[in-house]
Length: 156
Image (cartoon, rainbow, N blue to C red; front, side, top):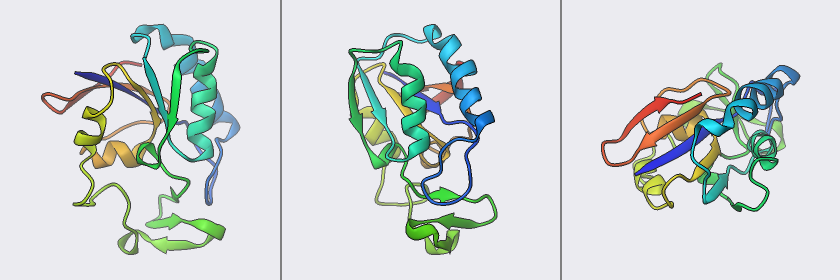
């Protein structure tokens, strides 16, 4: 079964960051203009942070009547600062070693989560879910995830 995952663009720093201007441009230009390369999804699953909502909004014009569900499993408001710290509520930061997220969490099976979704679902997500799947990703891209063999290919 195939599931699609759109990664957010470059983000600002801090807790629940929105996209930078360039990052929003990545989402609108790269993803929005090439969106037709994937099948129309029966469901959109959107992470709970601003950057995931902004990614979803870039697709909204193409999918005005698609069912939408929100899930922290697709990405939370917490954000890595890429210096070994995670920004959490109230703009506090904790060391990655002191943070239990999706990635590296033995209690969360990311492949089982995405396998529970309808075929061709589109996730508005990011690096944390991709990492939990054991995959690497780039910002502002769409990936096709194959649940049977747990593989991935970049579509856009």
